Length: 188
Image 1 (cartoon, rainbow, N blue to C red):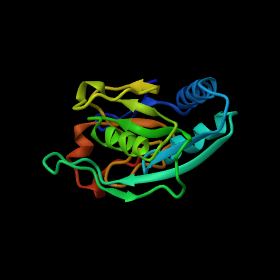
Image 2 (cartoon, helix red, strand yellow; image 1 turned 90 degrees about the vertical axis):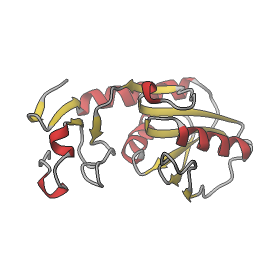
Image 3 (cartoon, rainbow, N blue to C red; image 1 turned 30 degrees about the vertical axis):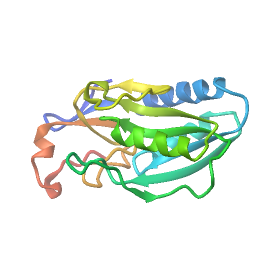
Image 4 (cartoon, rainbow, N blue to C red; image 1 turned 60 degrees about the horizontal axis):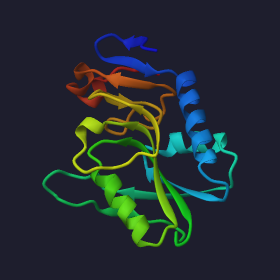
């Protein structure tokens, strides 16, 4: 599972086969949670790769929509909606799909927004979670894995817009984070 690509800079945390197993399990869990149609709402941009694979693992009737928000910024005290849903959610079962839940502030905001709009139910699916960093409680109904403080890239996760396209997930070491982006390692 942890094969190093660039020693001291990046370590492979989850291979493509491990990710496929996790996503398959999550798809089966969401399928088993109900029988009717479900709307998966992806949180842009990090969830795109995960969400695309997730819907291919599911057998229920699935609809997809997206939200984009400004990241919660400490001190700013709020989350700003950058892209809203295209369709109403009133009376619809919704699963909010995220790449990573950290403080929980953004996720809590989105759950509250979806409930206020009359969603029949709102559940949360996240590839990764850092519960040790929670500022507000958030229940993750469908969870891929809990992680530590590692900075992750690949499979939709980025650093400065880079590495989203990597097929595996890597933990970036401080060596990569301290360098200008032009000096980052080539993980491809």
